[in-house]
Length: 116
Length: 113
Figure 1: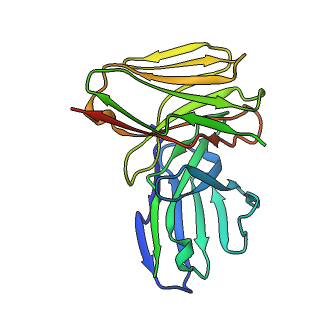
Figure 2: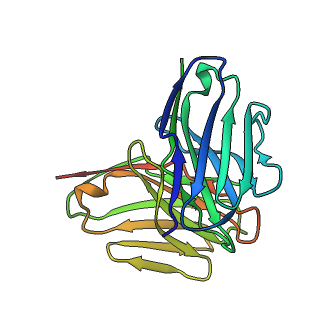
């Protein structure tokens, strides 16, 4: 149980284009999902907290107009990287907090974004 | 601000030996401490967690200990196997808060056959 999927698992795009990443909780509902970014050999950096039906809360230094987050249902959150540039290339990981859960986050497998 | 320090950054052990990874947190209100294992190119997987009302928890070869007074917690892996090789992250959070994790910097464990 507690499976989280991400799609796509990897994507290559041209500079200036937008890319959408989906995060789904497959066997549970999640009111809260989180989006992280991870650079090689580094820890996970929280980008934003996504709550179903409300606006995401972004961490300091994260551009909300560049990283658009939508949490339209209890099983789906999306992250759109707008006008992507090479410096946006990274490993993006989502996690989900089960409905009624108080602490444990379950992570997706990650999405590798490469911007040319 | 809140911080979690993790040591060592790299750890090499012989197969069958034990491995210990330590984390120290700064926020005394933290009360939930999960450990995640991350293999190359994959997302983190929860391997064990502990809440502040418990001092120790064990699951087969894996155990976690918590010292609230000193604000540190440790991951213990016994009888290590090559498949234990991965990056391990500790985290701290506050139940009933924003549910956000503060992650440690990670430990790259290599189990040598």
